[in-house]
Length: 186
Image 1 (cartoon, helix red, strand yellow):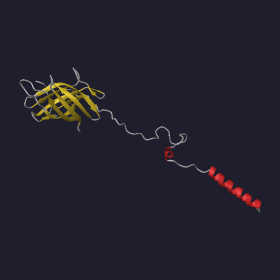
Image 2: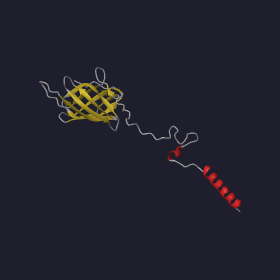
Image 3: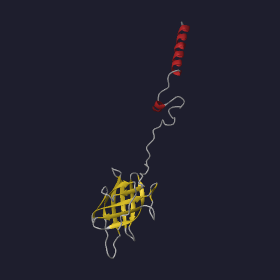
Image 4: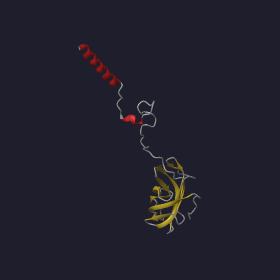
């Protein structure tokens, strides 16, 4: 009888050991994406990636021309007007200087300003400086609008001369004109 009991105990122990050794391994969260041969779900593309923290800059290259009825300037001191900004962009930089980015603004009361544009592009917006001769400059802030246009603000400062005190502060809405910018200065 002892031999039978011993045999039964050994047989049960053998079956239990076989069950433990041959049982399925435990599942872990990373195993859900596992494919044969990738050793636990670490294959390329199985790990979620975060979106880029820096989105690429929008493309502002071109002539943003409000000299027709489609675009406008609206100035606190000079009223309504029209104009354009021609932007040459290199990555995140609005390239300023001779034969580079340029602007011309004209208001209905006869006031005008023109000169070079320089600045930076970030995401869907841009900041820049408009030069108007001497120390006269304007801060420019804009972004892509809703209908193939750019919208934003300008604020001229240091533009006082012996004969005038030019203080233009306002907004612009300028549509893209793929035909190029036309000279509108007097």
